[in-house]
Length: 164
Length: 372
Image: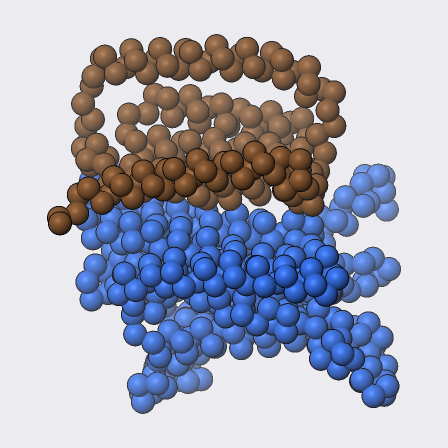
């Protein structure tokens, strides 16, 4: 039962990702990516990692994808009925995909042995919080610097357009 | 009894109970949402010194407009289902589904009563008893944005897209504030399960004040209600629709597809009312009512039957939900619409800092009172 659900959501995620790669319209590609993200949350749920599933939906589907989609919509490319075909970009995209695929295969070869041994059970909010604010507190706080840098960059970029 | 039933006894009872809960609770919500569409017009009529809808009648009986929701449904069904020629067909069709699904799914986490013993079985009055329900509430409410956005984008209409962009900006912003207002509650109850939170609210403070969430977090309640109203996209936060300027993200929708968006809005109102009742006003708790009956602070007790206690609790939850729905209706017909910069300013410059301050103060009080 659990295995069937995992394979089903896994298949949906893989299919959506494949379709996304061959989708030329940005917003549709983003929707396919959303499907893949939700299917991943489904895998977590099937493995009864509820908190992880909820966080996956809140952070990726709810926050990041929404921002992606809003950013995509205001691009002029989203408004063309027939996107231009650029063979150079296609080659570039395929090359990038090939590199990512080889990296993923390399990583997953290691993970396969790890996953079997770890008991992938429910992680409570408390356990997660203790890790984040205890053991990894410094790294966690360091992350906020990255966000600060991006905020400063965004403000700098946005302020340029404003007439003096 | 057949061998099949014997073998799968627990599973069958569980599925049957779940199906029954979904049917009763969801049916009740659908009926209530239909009545809300009437209440909306009646409240607006009351405020504008009119009578409101009162003509739809069956065999000459109008019951002051009670049949209008049914008449509306028939009208919507028989309207032309129009789709713009340039629209994205699949996404245009999916958008109403995306709008309706998250708000409906969210009701699974809301406890509408404690439990009922039926033939020796303990029937929890909550569809999905998750210990992480509050996170799922936030997760699913975050998905509601896609309905709005897809409707606007797939219509290929500039006004619809403007509405969708406004909607996306508004909902992302208020989502953050909404999530932060609930952190204080998480800290106090130490649990993300909604049923646990409601049970914790059954205690008494100083021996006579019901320990409802609003007593601990009065500030968070106001912030939560404001952010939730903004998520609901109704006046004063209805810039997404803005009838007088851009009409809205569902401008190209007609017939039942339009009805799905409208209905989603009303169902979301019920959801907000139920969440406000559950998180801040004790959910199904009745002050001084316990499993065995009333026990007043003075020590006087009144023993009550288990079924009567359960009925009182479900009734209490219903009354609270109806009250908050009425409150949302009154707010909608009282306040004028914000300007967009005011809307964004309210979220990022007022609600967000205040929500963070609330977390800080809650944490400080918990630390010094030794609760941490």
